[in-house]
Length: 150
Image (cartoon, rainbow, N blue to C red):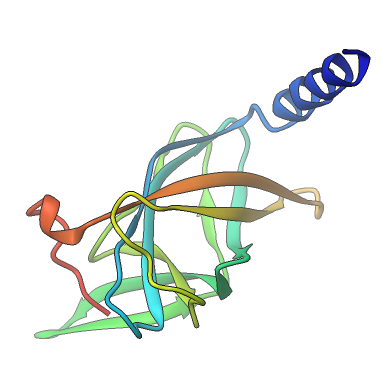
């Protein structure tokens, strides 16, 4: 029993250390067999200014920050080094805008699966921080707002 209480105590300490960042409504788009990339979406808020610089996952070679935007009549996607999160201004990662790109995924991601991701942040004081999130996979056909393919 002592080890159980110790583990809970460490988990509580860990959670309070990252309490300034909140992740809401995370989801990853389900993939087709053989598909090599998947988009990740969520809303991130922070009590302090910081930059989202990417992440890592055991299920992907890389977790990158990407942007989609219209350039004339063409939708273009590009990798970003970072996205700044300002206090009181939620960063919304969504289809057709800023999003996470999981590349060289190691298995098909099906509706109902969960993907562990460690998000990486750069703080204004030069330090880095991380948040571990288990993100549900959703079928893009389940919501008409999710018609975004890579």
